[in-house]
Image (tube, rainbow, N blue to C red):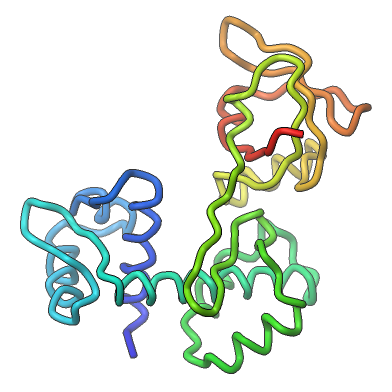
Length: 219
């Protein structure tokens, strides 16, 4: 059994590896955890002693097989709780993250498997992120950010990169939700902002920053 803090560190390391490569620096982890590098170093020594990470000073951090399994289990619980909150308790997709951050630490395998069954074994969470399986497998997404697509390309919105409440609320106000068909009508050369057509009817203008945070798959 691991402490909340240990679980949060393992999850953060996993996500940083996903985003930045095979090795995580102490400074990157300190920024992600909003703490001082000295505090990170102390925790890394504890995780290393428990064989959850590979850590050598000044050489960065990687997860051991054991550590990756713990991280994926926490991510699985987080995403299933988010799905449960949205599907069964009428939370909005911008309201669930902080609640799921607390619920993910409940230590009951039976509870999470019953929730998975109750939800009919969802593959993705409300934000389009894949849910790891019970045996720790994570199916990689084939989605790409909308900003990489070209004029006249047609795609389907499958997820978001930015999970902040502010960004999700912006998407709601713009009428952009998972499953939308998006056609790029024009790309402004000056700032790479996009004119898009949503579901063959609504025309929207979005910035390049917004396009970088919308995940789609080509239709």
